[in-house]
Amino acid sequence: METARGFRKLRPPLRLRLGLVILGLAAAMAAGPRILRPTQANPSGLLNTVKNNPAMVEELCQQFETINSSGSSVYSSTGLEQVAASQGISTADAEILVTYVVGLHCPDVT
Image (cartoon, rainbow, N blue to C red; front, side, top):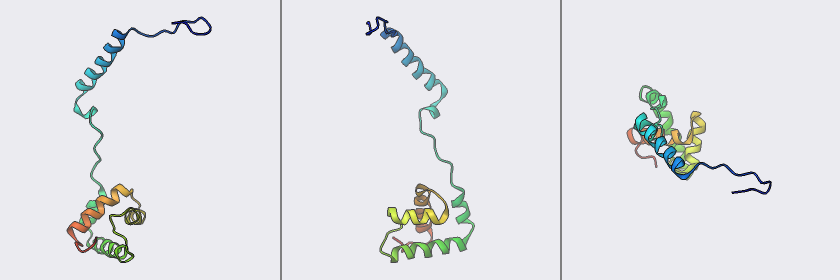
């Protein structure tokens, strides 16, 4: 295949490209299943803090009730953003925290 200036594009043959793909897959499988799975998150230290701090649990339940009284659910994006901002965590971690605290300590919160 020639380009406008007369240079030929170099491209490895199909068999070589296919071989490289197979080699890559074999290396990934040999490295173990962890390379083929997304990284799993480590448990949050925040949950351990909540477990060992009843005053924090009470404060969080009050915050969740306040969010409910404003017409929002703590599970809504607005509620999760408020919890995340108050705790200095991501909204994904806030969702885990809310689920944990509501499930164990303040079941009337929605």
